Amino acid sequence: MNKENKLVPGLPSGFEDRWDKKLLLKKKLLKAIENNFIKFGAEALETPSFEISENIGSFLAEDDNNPMSDVFSFQDGEKSITLRYDLSSPLARFVAQNNQELPSIYKRYAIQNVFRNEKAGNGRYREFMQADFDIVGNVNPAQANAELCNLISSTLSDCGLNKDQFTINVSNRKIVQGLIDELKISEEKQIKVIRAIDKLDKPGFGLKGVEDLLKKERKDQSGAITKGADLSDDQAQQILNFLKIKDLKQLKETLKNPLSQEGIKELEDVFEVLGYGSNLNQVKTNLTIVRGLAYYSDFIVETNLNFKVTNNKGKEVDIGSICSGGAYAKLISRFRGVDIPGTGISFGVDRLLFALMQLDQIKIEDQKPVLVCVMDQKYLKNYYELVDILRDNNINAEVFLNTKKNLGKQLDLANKRQLTVAVICGENEFNDNTVTIKNLKGVKGENNQTIPKADLINEIKKLI
Figure (cartoon, rainbow, N blue to C red):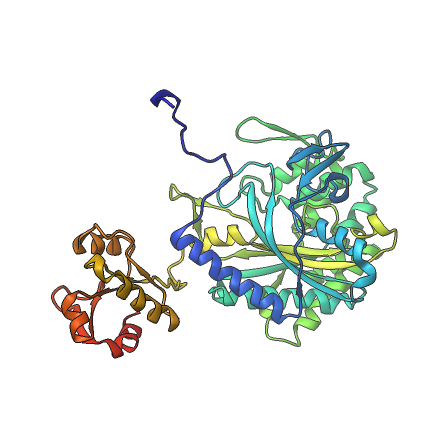
């Protein structure tokens, strides 16, 4: 291959390599998340990356004319298959397929990558990891949904956040659905209304942006036009008035239709159960969250961070919810024709990682190996005996892999890798049954010590 035809290394937009500190922090977050999922009683489930397109549906896209525009789909013989865009739809398919073998109340967790063909940036990716916890079956909804809030609080605390650094916002879809029904908004317009309301707190929207989406159309700063729900002025105004209400008591006095009242009562029941534990103050009512996905039926939750997050250029950005979800009554019945209700949450692991990389408060343990330097190739067998002793005592260790490099070059590489300890043994050490330990983080001139070989493990454990 000549110089002109050399490949240019790079990634498609919305995809990212993760390594070093970022990957170490991600692994720490995943461990904390999975430990909490297990602590709260869930069993692991893993589903394939691809699902049959019609099985997972088109709940994501906002383009009615191209309902699969936001996902990656491929033709597989006579079937269309799609890379999963969330972990809820595969769960619904799995439960419908294996219902007879599952317990009547099934708690599952899944931690896998999902794929969305959407605009990337500011902590949003086209491939990203989600960590889901769901409860499927006939349960007391207040208990199940309060448990989700408890799980979110416990998990984020274990991830290293203080309780004042995040807020768990909850609402109930029935509240706004009751208003929509009362205003006699046609069924084909309802999902657009829901999605318009859901954008209230998004950057650049506010009440004016929502009003435009409720009416004819919205033009953004770039000039792009989004078709609205085409409501009447009165219908739009009543929804905007609803969005200005912040207090659950005031809402109860304002919306008198039975469905809204039912949603308010269900929300009150959740807070009652939360009051039995220690997370009541962590959960707030936010009636403007309605979740854009169509399959949510009543309880909904979004968790937001209470600290500033910036992009690579230092500009403050809104990364959205880092854990969200809700209850779904009909998702599984698409397969079985029998309603099996469920409720669940999803942590956006990579979005959370994007934010937490900007905090210095989370300690990352990086267990770098001890480097056994090669002073003379004739002692290679002895060096491997040393590295076996270290590894047998659960100390990460490796022998330098190039016998032609001098000690200086070996230590240069160790410093570049930010290693902590090097073991140096030459003819004198092997004759005296000693080892020399070099503390690579120590003060120059005072960082070498020669010790009996029998003390190797104890002395190294003091340094790592």
